[in-house]
Length: 349
Image (tube, rainbow, N blue to C red; front, side, top):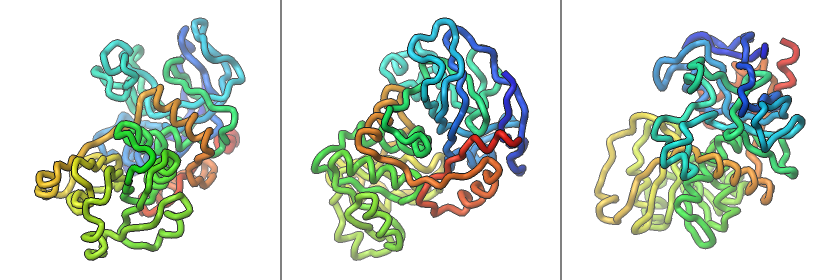
């Protein structure tokens, strides 16, 4: 299938139109016309080579909403015209214990990311959602609930599941005391989801200047990490802290905020951290953990949960021609919303 997308050809280059071919349908494949694609901070990290060398050209995008255009002969659950979604991965071995447990993101043989990785069969590099079409095996295609606004749904496929998964894993519910470090693209979704689960949520930030936004998302307020007296008073007051900070930092600033047996879960920074103090961990039986997206079943669960509770990311719609400007804003940080590309704008290329 001939199609077009926006690709990075090197770590220091802007994204530009790129014509390429999607694979012919295999028996279990679904061909999708992409309607919307979210813009994730990890897209920027990847194309910049921050996480290692990349197989350029690379088309980013792993928050994909679209419509089925055709299906392979063995596809059972989708048909032409269905509204569907694709998230951060498009394949896994389907045979290991993690895949059998619905945790394909932790596939023992390595899951296949939506872009920038070799396909498991033909070894061609996967290309993502900043494009007009995508072909994905049926097992990694998700249903869009009928009452979900598709123009705002795309970031749920990454920001939503990345924060939903640890909230589910650590059994957040009514009465849970949850802190969320940062109110960016991940943080504001963590707040909304935890509140809908019944938790009391506090945003932890360097200042209180986003307090209005925090309360609008359902948080009770902001704890300023630069206010030493406020931080001391908040000691041992959280059961779970979701750390969404996407850069190197010292998480030991926050561990004294956890109650005994509390956990701080890192979902933002992928890479080195500042040297940290272990004393708060040892003296409070506190834990520091990490979490990576969620499996396919759990990703479907968060889509359904967001539809049920009418939870949406704060979105700014852009055209594909604005993607390099959006990347510039992402690089500066401090965004409290997600960019979503209206892929109809690609028709002009």
